[in-house]
Length: 81
Image (cartoon, rainbow, N blue to C red):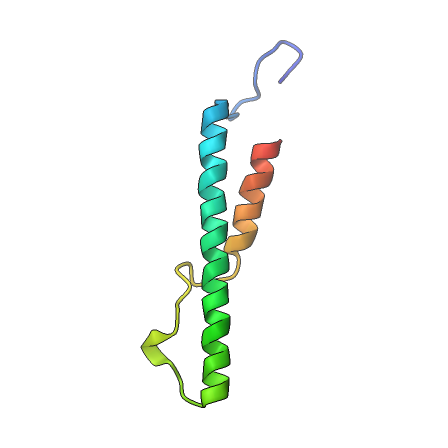
């Protein structure tokens, strides 16, 4: 906030219940991301031990990349500022 009490241009004001809802959604996303990582590790272990590929049974990352967890962390940091 500026000295005059005005918010800088482009600022977003969130109500406490909105922040809580956003934080809750981000935590669900992080938990889901962790579960996909766990399933991927189990699939890799199974393939290595059995010598047989899982093919279409192998879990796929819905985002297709590993940047997602950083995006979640950045969003949570933003809510703390």
